[in-house]
Image 1 (cartoon, one colour):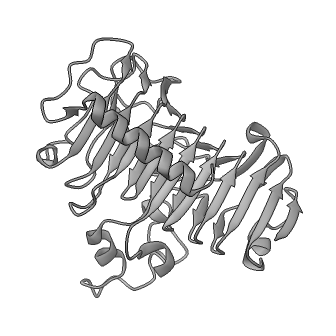
Image 2 (spheres, one colour; image 1 turned 180 degrees about the vertical axis):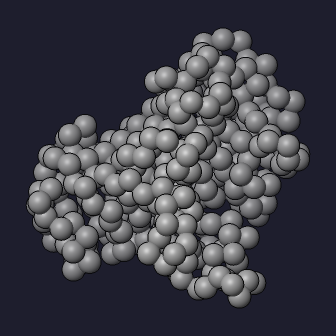
Length: 321
């Protein structure tokens, strides 16, 4: 096992690119103003102190890339993970862009690997803070340029864009902050004992999750024993989830919701009919005010809640946490 200790004056990307796996990188306190990609497998990165060990960058969707095209959502990340079985612990990842109304999406962490875990992390942005691959099929086709000769293969690098098969991601004791769709994607992902923090960016409505799971996926996003907190979001202004694509799945289990959570709980995604296929549910929740859920979500039975607790425990055990 390789062990490396680094400081903010070190070139973290260069260290990662020359790494022999497996390896552990220890980040000393300070601000690492670096955009990084973790492509090696079996890498663990551990921060000295979460609040004061910070990796930050400020790319945004409407920014012009060196290739002359806009970044769009998926090139805006501060940290991107493509290596398998990467674990992040005890530091903060920030996309410091604070005006998504003008700048568009601004990803902090993009996980483009089948297996990934995080403990004690803090992820901070506004819109689209955390992306969990795989991509929806239609975006794979679009960004690979398969059906549009005006596009080109490489707009999103192949190791970030295409993932064959399923993905399992696990987050424990993490704080994830954002406004609109700040946890989005298509993986089977478990968030246990996390803090989901809704910020304010000047818009009247916001959404925690935006899932896009395919119909063939039996499980999607599971938020288990989490605290849903407002740091600026107005009362009744935040929905638990809305479907980014048909069949998106999100369940909220034994979570505690503040009064910023809208009584309807879930949203249909503008004027679409995705609510007809969305797989949204909740169970064992504690609300600051009486909910009036939309008719197309489900309240889980006690037995179903127990089933999800078992699934969450299995994910935890798989990653040895």
